[in-house]
Image 1: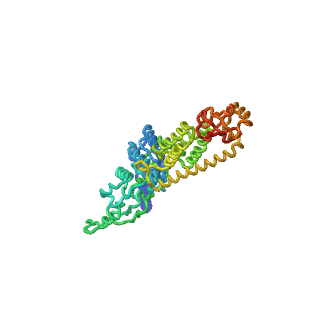
Image 2: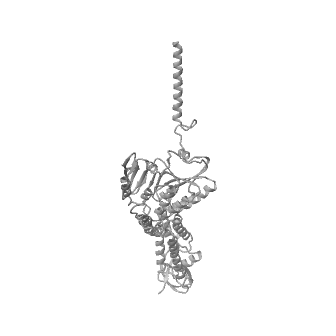
Image 3: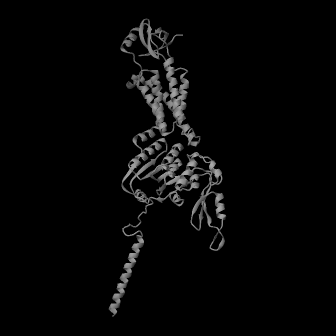
Amino acid sequence: MSLVLKTTSLNRLLTLLIVLAFSLCAWAAPAGFGQPMGAITPIEAHAHDVSAIITLHGPIDAITYSSVQRRLKEAQRRNCSIVVFDINSAGGLPGSALRLAKLIASSPLVTVGYIHSAALGTAILPALACRRLVFAPRGILGDGQDIASEHVTGELSLPAASKKLGLVLQTLAALCRRNGYDRAAAFAMVDASLTLDLVRNRLTQEQRLVEPVVRRQLVLATTAHGGSHAYHPWVFVKRVKAPGSLLTLSAKQARRLKFSAATAQSHDDLLALLNMVGPKIFVMRLNFLERFARWLAEPAVRFFLFLILVVCGYIEFAHPGLIFPGLAALLAMALLVGAPYLTGLANWWEILLILAGAAIIVVDIVVYGGIGHLAIPGFILIVVGIVASFIPGGPAGGIGFSAATAGSLQTGVAVVVLGTFGGVAILLLLGRFISLTPGLKRVALRPGPAAAISMASVLPETLFVGAIGRATSDLRPAGKAEFDRYPVDVITSGEFIEEGATVVVAELHENQVLVKEAR
C-alpha cells in the first residue's frame, strides 16, 4: 500500500512538472509554436516581395531631387511595392527639399523613411513626407537651422497663425496632417521662437506637445471621474523646448511622440519590421554622373576651375591661335557655371549675366580688335555672375537672405579674389621662366620659317625699337607688317590696328616683334 501511494505521488509530481514546463514555453512564445523568442512583429500588414532602398545621403540639392525622381521611376518600373529612404543628411537647399518632399508625398508606392544616422535641417522635409519613420538607435531628427521660416507667434491652432506661415511651415503642416505627425513638434524643429511643454492625460495616458498657454488651460481643466467633481486629468510632465533653440528628437523621443513607428537595431531588423520578405530588394544610389556633378560644385574644385579660366583665358587673348588655352578656358567656364546650375545653386539669370559678359568681350575683340574699355563691363558681369552662382536660392525662388547666404557670398568672393591673384602669380611665373621650361616654350608665338628668315635678315639693319613700318594686314592683335619692304610677323599688346596703318616697333624679343600704332 505504501509503495502504491509513493508511486501515485511521484506520477502526480511528474505531471505537474510537465504542465509547468509547457506553461513556461507558452509564456515565452505567445505567438504560437515555431516563432523564435524575441521575434519582431512587422509594422507593415502586407508582405512585400519586391522592394527598393533609396539612399538619401549628403546635401540636398537639385541633383538629389532629380536623382530621387529617377530612382522612384526605376522602382515603379521594377514593380516595387515599398520604397525605403535611407536618410543621412544635414540638410541643403530649401527649394530642393520642398520639391523632394512633394515628390515623395505624391508617390503611389508605400514610402518609409529610415533615420539611420541623422535627418537635420531641410532633410526633415523629405523625412516627414514618408508615410512612416523608422529610427536606428542613434538616429536623430530636427534642428532645421538652414530653413528660413517666418516668425510664428500665438496659439498654433488659431486661424490667424496659419496666415503667418511661410512656404516651409505650410508644407510641414500639410505633411503632418497627411501622415499623422505632431504639428507643434514639427514647427518647433524650424522655429526657434516656440516654447513647447509635454503634458500627459492620467486617464488615457495620451501625451501632447503644447505651448505654455494651452498647457495652462489643460492642467486647470477638470472633469468628473470616480465620483469626484474636481479631477484634473492633464498633468505637466516637462518642458521639451525652450525659446531660442530648435527641437531635435532622438530615437526614444521620436517613438514617444509618435514620429517613429519602430526602432530597428540592425538592417535585418528593418527588413523584418517592414515585412520585406521577397528575394528582390534593390538598393539604388547616386550614379557616377550625379556624383561627378556634385563634386564639381565643391568650392575647392570651383576655385581651381576659376584659376584655369584666368590663366588659360589670358594666354589665349595674349597669343591668339594657340587653340588649347582657349579650349581649356571655355571648358573651365562651362564646368564653373554648369555644375552649380545642375545642383540648383545657379539660376538662369546668373548664367545670362556670364554669357552677356563673355559676348561683350568677344565683340570688343572682333569689332575693335582687342581688349579695350568695352571689355570692362563684360568682365564685371562675368564676376558678378560667378559670385552669385555660389548663393543658394530661397524656398520660393530668388535669393534667400540668411546666415547661409552670407557664408555662400563670402565663399564666392574668396574664390574670385584668390583665383584672380593666383592666376596673376602663375602668369608672372610663366613669363619669367617660360624660356627655361621646355614644355612651356610652346605658349609663346613662334614665327614661321619664312618670317624667321626675314627677321634674321632684316633685324640688324631695319628692325630696332622705334623703327617705323606699315601694317600689311589687320593686327588682331597678331598679323604682318612691312619694314623697308621686308615682311615681318608682328603682334600688338592687345589693340586692334587696321591694315595700312603706320606702326612703330615698341619691343624686340628673340622670336617676337611687339608694335603699336604710330601717333
